[in-house]
Amino acid sequence: MWTALLASCAALLLASCGFGEPSATTIGVDCGVENMQMGTEMNQEGRRCLLEAFEAGTPAQFVSRMTSIEGDPIVRTYAVFGPGDVRIAHDARLDKFGSGKIELLRCAGLVPVADWNRAMSDQMPASYVFIEDRCEPYSA
Image (cartoon, rainbow, N blue to C red; front, side, top):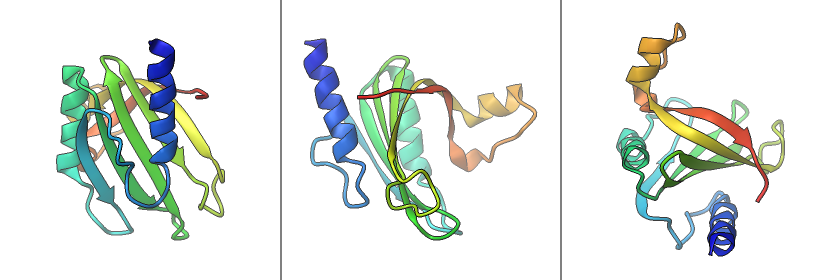
């Protein structure tokens, strides 16, 4: 059962990494998409949705599309699978000055920015909503 679940999760992460619309197969709650370009606002509602899903241990997905300094597209697909299990597919295949590949990360958590700012000297803007915590590369 776990093998099938992990295989479907990996397929979902890889399928949703393109610069187009997110995959029709969504894990749990669909927290939406943010389309950030230089000078635009983050989707704080979608970010709060993902953080709340993580805190509740509820499966959820959130897609963040951004551009590099040079204007190349980068897509980060976040998937919460349960308590202590957040996975990120960072798709930089179209970033001419980036890695040019999809990188998979598994994180132990998402930390609310307010908690981060109380504990750390480097303050993060409240608009980030969460900070990725204890992320390690993995392969599907």
